[in-house]
Structure formats: structure tokens, C-alpha cells
Length: 110
Image 1 (cartoon, helix red, strand yellow):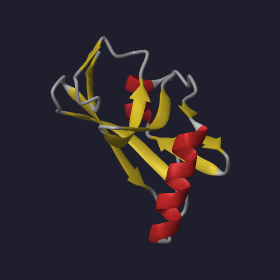
Image 2 (cartoon, rainbow, N blue to C red):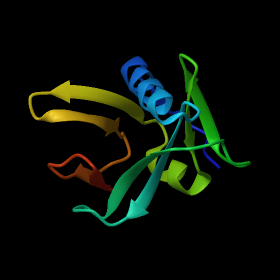
Image 3 (tube, one colour):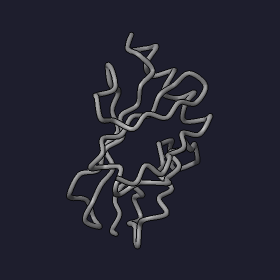
Image 4 (cartoon, rainbow, N blue to C red):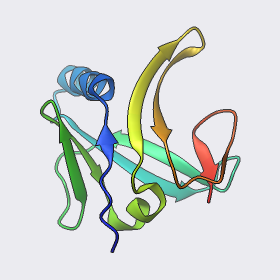
């Protein structure tokens, strides 16, 4: 399996740490890919209690990003960032594997 690393930006790590502290959970962000969304696949974010046995784990500033092997195939080499703008604040995935993405930024096609 391709184990091309993922990157969790410092701003995303800081936001995960803040959210996790408010919820009394470990600072572990799970990113997965599911079928659906405007373009065929969509990103799903959530806090995890712990990595699972076969997860890819990336750490930035003490915060871990975990991705299951199936999802990793679609997002290998991506950067997970946290962006604040006039339109709102959100986690954003910069995915080099996506052939197309939609305007909402949460779904993509390969």
C-alpha cells in the first residue's frame, strides 16, 4: 500500500487541540473519505479516542491526524488545513489526487 504521508498544518492542529480540549477528548482528528457529495466522494472529519491498528498516523504540534487505509488511497499526499475567511471557518483538504472538486470544498472526484 502507498504510505505517502499526509500533512496536518499548524493552524489545523491548533484548532483540533482547541475543539478536543472543550470536549474533554484526546487531540486526535480522524479524516475519512465516503461516497457521496457533489462530486462523488466527500471528506468526513471527527475526533477519535485513539488510532486503530492499521491507521496512518501523522502528528503536528502534539495533535494527531489518523486516516484508515481505504481512505488513504484517495488522499495520499494531501494537506489538511484550517482556514478562516469572511465566508466562515472550516477544515480544508488540499488533495493532489482530486481531478475535480465542488464549490463547497468538501467533496471531490478522482
